[in-house]
Image (spheres, helix red, strand yellow):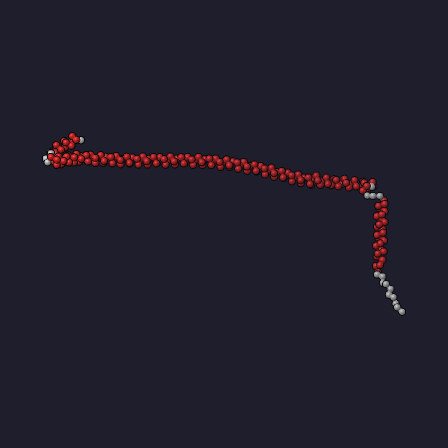
Length: 197
C-alpha cells in the first residue's frame, strides 16, 4: 500500500489573491474617475481655488521680483555701467597722458637735434679756425724761411759775382799772357773784363 504525499501549501498562499483584489479595486477606482469626465482643472467647482492660488502665486512672484530680484539686477547694471564709464575715463586719461608724453618726447628730440647741430657747427667752425690759424702760422714760417734763403742766395751770388770778376780778370790776364807772352797789368785786365761785360 503506497502513501501519497499531500502537497504542502505555503502560508502566504493567499497573497496572490490579496494582490489581485487590490489591483481590481484600483482599476475600479480609476475606471470610475475616467468615467466621471476628464481633468479636474477644467471643472467649475475647482476654479475658485485655482484662481486664489494663481493670485497668491502672482502676488508672491511680483513681490519677489520687485523687492528682491529687480533691485539686485538694477544694482548689477549700475555697477557695470559705473565700471565701464570709469574704465573709459581712465583709458581717455591714459591716452591723453600718452599723447602729452609723446609730444614732450618729440620736443626733446627736436631740441637735442638742434643742440647737436649747433655743437657740430661750433666744432666745425673751431676746427676751421684752428686749421686756418695753423696754416697762416706755417705759411708765415715758410715765407720767413724763403726770405732767409733768398737773402742767403743773394749774398752768395754777390760774393760769387765779386769772385767772378776777379777770376775773369785773372783768366783774361793769363790768356793774354799766353797769347802774347807779355802779362797785362791788373788794371788793364779788370778794365777789359768790365768792357766785355
